[in-house]
Length: 368
Image (cartoon, helix red, strand yellow):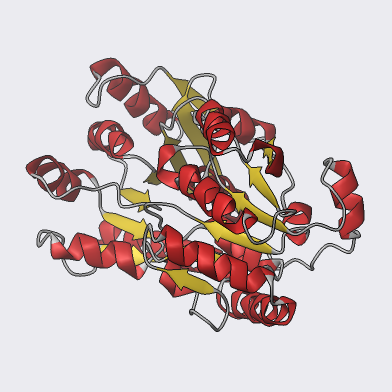
């Protein structure tokens, strides 16, 4: 099949949805499908897609129903005989949805890694008419959408994320610490995510301040980049903990950095199924996370990680201190986390389910 991925994410953005698209595209290409990408001109997303030898369509994306863009997309769909469109943001659904009607593309599927669709008339009118289905990665998002009352049964398909099964890196933690200028023989608590408001790094820093009262030599590792970088640095300074915070920016290979962390925290206000939690669990790191979105589908609290009620800074600080003082508990949680991911969240399983769903909906549309 000829499959077209469209993602109008901002030019500097690179997060879970972008990783998902590129990963799925690579695997589908290996299975014989022809893949195309579209996104904002000069975006990091398109740059990385092109670096993986995918044909790209750069777009100057502005309005949701821009007639010039719709014409350009429609022409591209006809020229390349696109069979299926997979979109990311709601803007993509509207632009590609109108264009596919003009060029008679059989299928458009929206992939929602976060609950982008809101309960209002705009989405109720557009989505059922422009998209043939929704892929999401958690039961939590599916249930939220079903509560709106206007999605038909079977319209939403849950396909859980998967990551490649990888061994814990054999490189010594001391070597990794030296590589990134991290002190030796200190406890490290990490957070791995884009630096955006929704990830609530301010809460991570407030937890850090509380933990430092009992474990003053602990270091706090922030891996990722984004528009909130300066604000996060300023807040760490205001809290008086800047010397204990290491901001490493975006890292292409994050797995070795997980291995130097004693704990990994997730402080987001909202999530789908976060890849950073999957990665940490794969690397045998215990995770303490707010119970948001589909996180509870990954972490079974006290068995393979710790769940905390959303925004409960006191309890997250308390549990972080407890685990930092209990290496045996950390090790047991980490081992259980890795075993769980290896059994339930494999990359092959995810790709099988995506391919099966796309073929299923394509054949259904062709039959109709």
